[in-house]
Length: 258
Image (cartoon, rainbow, N blue to C red; front, side, top):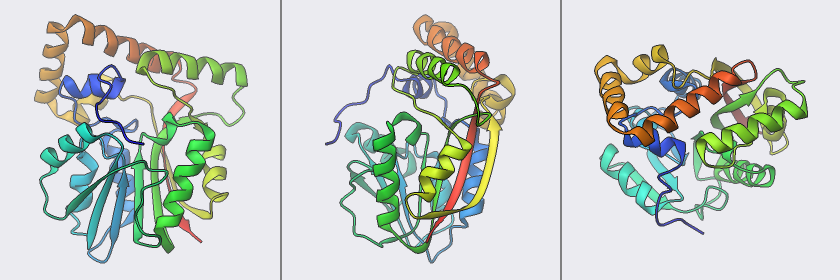
């Protein structure tokens, strides 16, 4: 099952409409850390789940992999990625990351960012299992998601975080602790090889300037000033990130298929 149109009320598309290019929870710094740990080379067959605006796709393709395939659920979003990236090596498949239809053992590197967090536990399991199916033994799977910390955070606090994030981002959000992220990967045939984290500062001024550059940051602020609805949404999301700053962060894990 695929989606023909994007839900423009979802937080990441609100930010994208304002001109924000980096939409991952740990910013471009954590994305670069993930790609560095994955070490994409000209020998690699790469698959990306949910490429967003194509920021990481461009970075991956700059390493000249043998092949690159993006799996995108939404046909409209897939067209945007194609227009943004414009690379002859890029192939886009419209489909679900839990059932891509791509051949087993066809990839040496698979990654996805800011997409598992939005899934239920069974959906997370299905997507990670699909990554394992696609990868050849020894292949790497990279994720960049929202985390809960510390690992012993109470269920009461976690439910409040999930509720607030869902209201702010306008989609279901089910972040996991570091231990839980590791466990779900290991349960699906992976060994953890790299872990890194960053504060959830996606909408803080310092992170935004680092991610977007000073002038694009100014353009985003200017567009917010002109668009009261978008401004309200961004400030609401930032308030939620700040409110739960002691319990949510951005996590990157790279794992190797056994």
